[in-house]
Amino acid sequence: MIRTSMWFVTLALAAALLPTPAKADTTYAVDETVGAGSATGFITTNGTIGTLDIADIVNWNLTLNDGTNPPVDLEGPASGNNSLALLVGSDLTATPTQLIFAFGAADGGRLQFYVIGGPVICYSTIVDCTGTIGVSLDTLTPDTHFVFTALSDTEAIAGPVLAPEPATVILLPAGIALLLLIRKRFARPFRLTTT
Image (cartoon, rainbow, N blue to C red; front, side):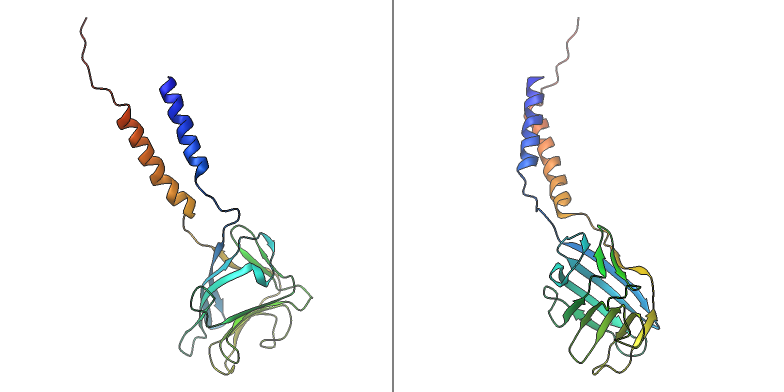
């Protein structure tokens, strides 16, 4: 009984000593139909929940397809760094599972991932990128072939990425190894006694 309790305390202490980040990056999957085209890939934030600003967007990798021309990749700082991000206004919010954009807001906000004078995807609350409120994209340089989807409500623009958190991936094998070690250490030989 005492040995079992001691091992449970040891196991709990080992689990408590594993490093865990205070706030982990959150990656959201993008799979958006835009007119005759599409945008797929991911956007990564610093884990902030609630209203986001540009500093909260830490990376992205988006493939834009306008339905006519060859697809183009827009890559953030950790993915190739060939594009920029712009966030104006307070229309982008994050939940643990979604990025949400308020297309119906009247504050002139927008979120863009772009190459200067070239490919762009624009989520907008005003008539700016293409002459409509909603989401638009262009794969050409210079901007000449926009496709768009008009939107006027609050919409999810990215959803969950189905992958286990790194801490879970690390803890499972560590826990199994510790249980096997405990079992081996306290294994008693089998003895058959008769009365």
